[in-house]
Length: 488
Image (cartoon, rainbow, N blue to C red; front, side):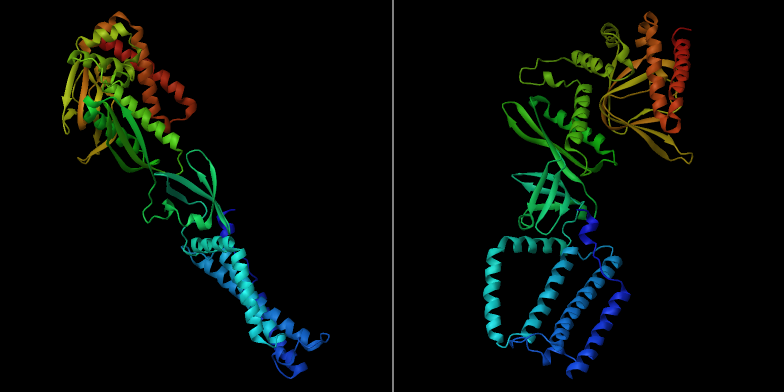
């Protein structure tokens, strides 16, 4: 059932309704002509054991036309209201209930005025019948009243996303269908469909995410248990950076996240990562994005999960640096290096600890080094020509910066500042020169990686058919610069 079908009310056109109203007055005149009174029931009595005459037929028709007219006037009002109102709508179910009430009241009045001579007998019979119907159809009436409450108050409509709290946890659902007795929901996590009666639904603890004044998303959380008692503060810091990076994608996430320790047992620390995202996103998709980013950041910081535990061996600073370099080399342009070549770099690599606000790289300065980000966050900025600094990129653990200066000697192309306290590995020309001189194939492999990354950054400005050509041209140009810088 679509949202349109829930509120689409049909009514006769204004001209037809005007015709119905006119027909009521015509019947008043006709009944007056034949019976001497405009109201047919005055001179009609169906309780007498006789066949129907013209006056009886006119009286019955008068009630029927009156009921149809009142029903169409009510429906025309509902149609006009729904067209004029953008926030509130009169649901189709309400109109249907009012239609039943109109015909029931007119029919009840017709029976009293045309047939029953003993009003008290009728009231007694109807009261008993009413009580019996309520008892028999109790569940139906409860569902009907629940549906009326939901639709009149506009609590939920088709297409809304709702968070339901049950069994100590919350699940996000999308409302698929609504009818007189039940609501069909689809769980976002696994597309599981669930049918809930209206009377039960109104008792649930739920939040309608689509009805919030300020749009908010679905708040989700991941519990991660690690044997990291010695490094709990470091892990929390890394997880917070993870959430900051992931939620920076405003097309999928809202600017909300938190991380903290929620449990400790036998050295195993439980971390809770909470975030908020668009409710239509699959839980597996968002959890996967966060977990993969967390694993990358943990690896960049040399906190390999397989080694985090009570029996983790003591590590000296040299071993930590070596592990950082090995892990970081697997993520960027240095992934083409062999284990032995990484070991050569490790002999000279420098560990830089930079506090937040440090101006790490200045535009146009001459330099021959690059930085691998093990921990922390960097921001790349350029001037807008008016003296204002504009952040054009954010760099996270596992990223690198300054590689063109290292490999080609080109001046720095932008300013880079430390946003969050960072641990960086600095690699200089002298550190990598012997590696490239002994294995010149690395020059072309690094050139290919750099060219591909540059072209990908410009892909929105390029015809995709020209992308490969652009990569090849950049590869040749970069390789020539590297050769000229190292082997001249």
